[in-house]
Image 1 (cartoon, helix red, strand yellow):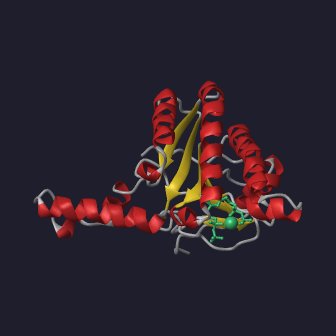
Image 2: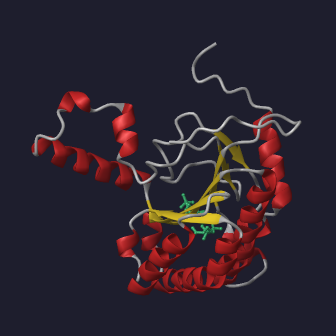
Image 3: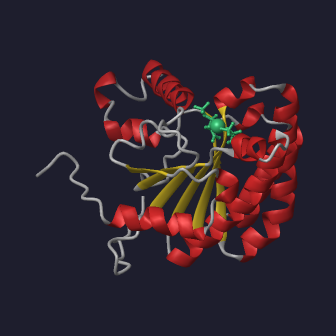
Length: 243
Ligand code: IPE
Ligand code: IPE
Ligand code: MG
């Protein structure tokens, strides 16, 4: 894994990897007496803003929580609408992302998605694989506990085949078997909407991540919110348990 030195923005270091739990679409709509679906539609604009903002600030990795394993238990109409939005967003943005030098990756149980979205996911990954300005990882049908269980199954199979022994299991080995194997751990995790929980996002990877919780609802998220979170990160003292 490539580790870059952290640059200083004049207001403290810039995080190398920012992860965002994009929450509050439904409440944004309900506050305006609109259907929840309208909130998800507005959220797409905030995604563009976050991607542009990270590019402008020189952040190398952005990871966005778009749909969780648990979100499959929402009403089917909302799931279908979200799938429609992913379809629309991926088709519409593939050229812009590719031209902007963004490499797009996906984590999560992609096989649970409709076939055409799986094809789009494959196409975007292919089209952007040689880019490196910003590594954008989209967590779709993602749950951290399921990701860790999957890694354990693979390690278990390797032990059964004699390729590994139980003594080989280390933190590094587990990290290498996760969906995020080729990403550094997030430096900064932002959650919008005022909720203060991880909701099964990157549990292993956030061992030493700094958390910033914003009251902003995701559809209202703008570059200024990103900058505020990055500035707060810049003032944190990361100690990693040492003195
Ligand atoms: C986040 O917004 C988007 C997804 C989880 C897909 P929500 O839909 O959770 O919005 P709230 O939390 O109900 O306001
Ligand atoms: C987390 O938000 C998942 C995404 C933002 C994609 P949720 O709205 O699903 O989380 P809970 O239910 O409030 O914990
Ligand atoms: Mg929510």
